[in-house]
Amino acid sequence: MPFDYLTPLLHPNQSKIILLVMDGLGGLPMESGGPTELEAATTPNMDRLASEGTLGQTVPIRAGITPGSGPAHLALFGYDPLHYEVGRGALEANGVGLNVNSGDIAVRGNFCTLDENGLISDRRAGRIASEEAIPAIQALQSIQIPGIMLEVRQVKEYRFAVMMRGEGLHPHLTDTDPQVTGKAPLPIRALEPAAQRTAELFTQWVVAAQKVLADQPKANGVTLRGFATDPGLPSYSDVYGLKAACVAVYPMYRGVSKLVGMDVIRFEGDTPKDEFGAVKNIWDQYDFIFVHIKKTDSMGEDGNFPGKVKIIESVDAALPDLLELHPDVLMITGDHSTPARMKSHSWHPVPFLLWAPATHMSDMETKFGERACARGGLGTFPAVDTMPLALAHAGRLNKFGA
Figure (tube, rainbow, N blue to C red):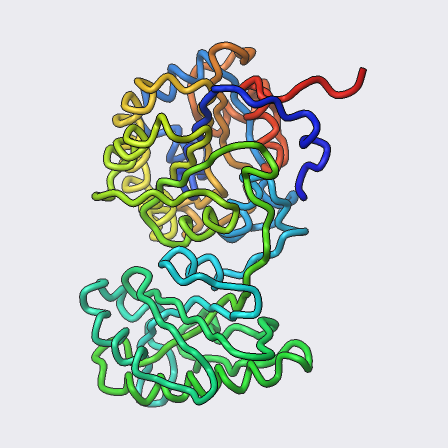
């Protein structure tokens, strides 16, 4: 289990912890000497917490390594992603209610647009709306393979999940997304002999998918990424002694939370205020609540600097709703950096704010931003240390040794 040394130190109490993650929060200046997205945002509430609390910055995986969202969140949850490897498929499938058991194989799918030569002209099918994708999802759900149980679920917009259940399946398969346009989807290859039959079954499914999607105007092709099975992660209750919940809009983040034993909370709406309202509704039932904001990452990937600033500001404007709950520990950070300047995830350290009125030691910083966090009292630390910090500041750890 992660942090085996913590188990004998756990000290249950009534303290409450919130981990607020703005996906892809970290950024870069668009021009030399300019502000990052977080520094450019007007964030009076976060700045007040920064002046009262302690700042730092996290390294999600290791220095110089650009993380995916799945491993970056596992790191924040205290599960070293180099030890606990979880494929994207298991995250997506669990996030949309497919219970991926050991031996089941799940994979995340993207609808794409293929030209007359079978080459990808748009990797995301024109970012097709969820409503537009329904006929394509229904077409995929009609595919059957003898001796295999198949389930297909829509995730959001152009994304879907496929789960295959049967005897002798293995997840060690290559992705089919070439990550660029102008190329055909890649063939599925087995990375070890035991996975050869699974590669053949998914190849059979892909061939059938191309046939049933041929008449779709945008979503006439598919790519598959992140073949995975249930990783069997130890739960938050076992590792940390916490009853934990997840409040998130996007399915993948509900999926990774479910894999570590969090309860996934259903709610209406998709704004920060909606999410914080959901936290308020469950406040008395949980010790730890993870809240996820997606659109900071989306704006960064689109290269939309002003849009990312606006999302950060909307989170700050709603933040009093969380503060009214009087959490004992509030941590505000990102899972990774997604600078609008780069239009992609990056390896840069991620801003981190710790606010725990009864136990924190404030530093000299007064604003929440990358440069301030680089100077902050917490320093630069591995993201996997987030949970021990939270537990300590919540008074949930006893002394180590005599």
